[in-house]
Image 1 (cartoon, rainbow, N blue to C red):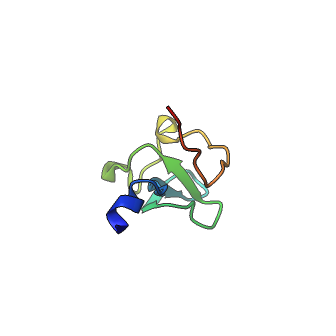
Image 2 (cartoon, rainbow, N blue to C red; image 1 turned 90 degrees about the vertical axis):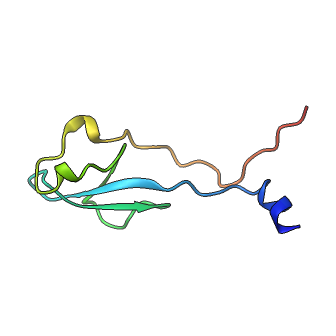
Length: 77
């Protein structure tokens, strides 16, 4: 029965974040459902280990998302 209900519940999507210092250098990565605390974390499309200790490329950053409702509306046919 739990499997049945899990088909209809919303799942949190994990996203990728990079920790960037004051000089724009990538220091760490994190993969989590919510944005980490602190201003130094920026969302990236994917983590690349070659970015560690290097300036984070501008095209790596993801545009900030709008906060959306936690519930999903069911589609009816």
